[in-house]
Length: 358
Image 1 (spheres, rainbow, N blue to C red):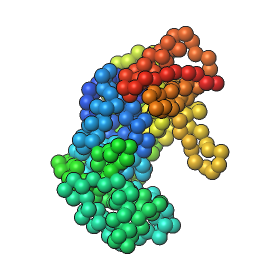
Image 2 (cartoon, rainbow, N blue to C red; image 1 turned 180 degrees about the vertical axis):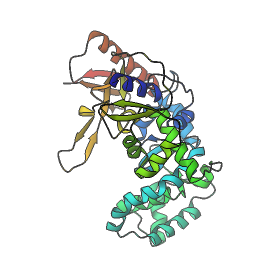
Image 3 (cartoon, rainbow, N blue to C red; image 1 turned 180 degrees about the horizontal axis):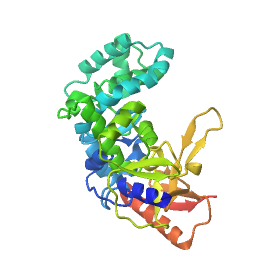
């Protein structure tokens, strides 16, 4: 059963079955895609799409507003589509605010401050006037609001969760902000009951088999709301070690123990589940030496299991990829790693070199 769950997740997440050819449609299929590391998150989409979909093509889709990036869950940045962002924020925004409330109070931020900042955004971002965070901070400071540091970031996050602003196109290597009303003028609106069912359907069809606890973690919803959504969809129940796993449909897949993937940091296959029995993270998720934070790394995944880590170091005219397996790789696995690195090279559009480290 464990092998079945792993293989189904790989297929449903489109890691092994590339059912989508369009980046935005892939994001819609997955519901939302964790994306605080922008470059790796694009690779997370690319590895789920057919050959020929490059970093540049995904970037163009993002810059055109076909894919947006905002704090929609947990709270952290996620890719989401313009059609989905409205009803998702209405469903999850309150949860984002609750999770940030303590930190906001520590920074002395009150609702009145957020509302004033939202008014500033509506004024300075209108008519497609995309601004970087630093530029937006100058406007906040000019209005007597915090314009730098943690306070600026928290204000922007709050206004995102309120559905006022979202991502604009990248300006070289910098993110910009845009008005959500302009970037997603055709956003779908759903009733709360419809939204609960729709989000549950998106998750369990694309991430299943998964537990209710997994879904609560991923969505940030309260357990009663998450359970209500699950009850409204026709999910199939599977049992493993007395735990109930739910999925919508079952893909026809065969175990491929030597299948290798270079998954990026925070990939949905690794972070979208609270219960990590099926895919032990090992070195891909380790506790930091100083403090209690968890550090995530790019993961070398073989046969659906974390088998090591990898990193990509950008040089002036190339990218150096270093792979650190947990064990000696077989000849077949080594050959497949090289193929994956070649695929990554085609995706980036720059030369990529490969080395191993112990």
